[in-house]
Length: 122
Image (cartoon, rainbow, N blue to C red; front, side, top):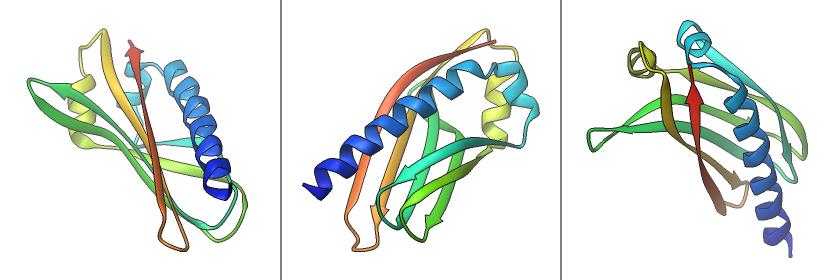
């Protein structure tokens, strides 16, 4: 039951992050060094990781990467850094298909992850 609750919470958080990233324009993201995703609701302590990547010519290029240790249950912001390759990839594009991955590893070492796709626009 606890793992099921954590999986549902992880999926809910992924949807919220997807909505937040969909509102960020490529042009604005390219100029930033990092993006702060306002909240992650953790049911227990552990480590949360967020990663956004795009597939270009059969290669996957990471455009956002973030990681945060969470000491206990609660709400925490997550800071994701915009990669140099990601900024180069965004240059001059009108839209970019991105895969967003959110993973959580609790203090006992159990890991859950979820992915979703979105299209970011200029």
